[in-house]
Image (cartoon, rainbow, N blue to C red; front, side, top):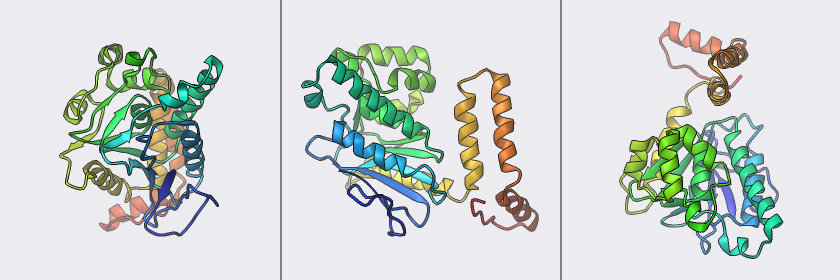
Length: 277
């Protein structure tokens, strides 16, 4: 089951399990809890995840999305190889295309996304984390794009997102060797944003992700969304085109009430109260 849950049940968008409930505070948690398969990305699991993510697109109440696991010691173990072994070539190609589409769907969410890695994130599991904007990990978490050790290559965006994130030279080394790295090494590489000592309850990375989400929460939501769009789109084009994208995104912030509130709060020397309008 893939579920997203919040501290209150203000809104439920899906009439079936998985259930998506938005926090009153604007933070949504997507919980992965396929215990027996270590959150392996099988057909049903991926289909449910896509349904959950699709509900998060157009609700202005969503400010930050956290992806986390309820399986102890595991974020996501990657593709379900037991399922894959039963597929023919065309079925395998279609499955990986669906997996790639899920990661693109996550990457295109307009709000900031955070992966909380309290355990292993391998193959497609790390690709899911790479599709998020930010990553927090426990120092004990192991992560890697290990596909070459299985006769494959990263096929759900990893071969493209990892070089963009940590540089092509280091990305090639990690992918060619299928190496796994711990949280501290991942931080030093620029693969993750924050690393924390694991705690007794095994959710230190989640707590750190929540702390990060709460830092984002008070900021003007439209400005945050536009900043994400400007950076994501600008990274894929030349600097001149990127400046044009920045201008376009900036122009969409100028007429907002939040911009007026930000200016007024500064002048009046008080904390701003943003409404997302």
